[in-house]
Length: 525
Image 1 (tube, rainbow, N blue to C red):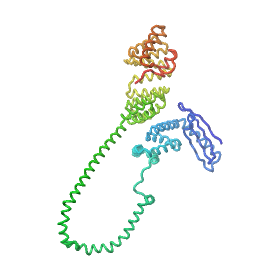
Image 2 (image 1 turned 120 degrees about the horizontal axis):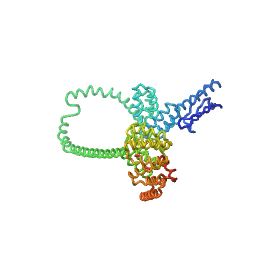
Image 3 (image 1 turned 90 degrees about the vertical axis):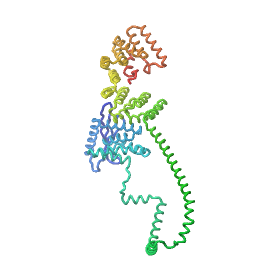
Image 4 (image 1 turned 180 degrees about the vertical axis):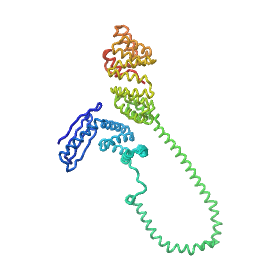
């Protein structure tokens, strides 16, 4: 068995491409694509029986190069991204979003095994979820109609194939003979017997009607009706009817009928009123359960009870409906702060931005997720975009500066923050950042000035007291430094917890820069 092996690097990922010839059970050429050791795609070519060794080797080389070219172009990085987003959406029970992600994968590679497997999972899940199935049907039908009207027939056909696979449409009323025959065979036995007996009765009765009843009606009954009094009804019987039966009907039977009808009317009216009230209560309860405010409050309860996954799903559902919900976004963010999984936070926020790219607060949170997962170069453009879309400038500029510090560009961070001060910013956090940056650069005098300004604006912060104490200690003002440290300790004792980053603390110089970039002690918003 011969083959080819290549390794490519795309962004931060390493791709291994392996192509080999298989002879069992049939001759074929198979290429596996691995991303960081995990298989993301398989390309297979079934060779014809009469293919010679030279042609197979040429095809194998050609297929290997084509796949490597797609890797270098970033095709399989997109496949990995769409698969990841689709899995997140599926786990969040957003079947519509998951379908669109896996559809994007199949548009690039129709036989992708993992995407097809998740389509089967979505199909099974939608069988139990009528509301989700209806949402998928309506959403895809609208997309198909829009694509067809704009002339994008191939995309519309692909979406219709996905829709037919996931949610099979009902059969049309114009059914063929085979379908009607199968429907007849599926009828219950008692329905079939009743139909056969009625058919037999009609076959037996029709000749009798033609031979006996119809001549009698035509020749005897109709002439007597025309004369005024049918046969068998005499004047004597008419007199008895008027004298005895009519009074009984009028005096006895009709009042009972009226009484019974009135009772039934009252009962029906009361039942209708009761059903209306119950329906209103059920609808109100259902509306409460669909209300984003109800979901957000329930998410808070779950968060307080440390039920992180349930809380996150509720907040995420609210954000899909209303990305402007600050309460839901704050709760959603807190679920990741508790676990520290900011990588996953970035993936889910990026999926939300695809649905609503206009909301600046989502953009800012995505930037924070990138920074806190040490992806500083990716975080900076998101901070800048958040400012362009109207988000508060100071938190974004602080975030950008923190990323620059982590990239060893302390001078760039200082310039950025000094510009905020010159333009009139009075935020204590900017002064604290400048104090820490100047301290990291060895300019302790300048650092102490900014620490002092920050302390004037926020005198309850033990963190700033400690930072200023560390700075003065470096300037050989030990007595003042010890006084500041004691003040910080008393504030921490009163608060019950120190306002410091978790973990062991080193010397002032060792901890200053790290605490600034990796564990900023104040909230940005």
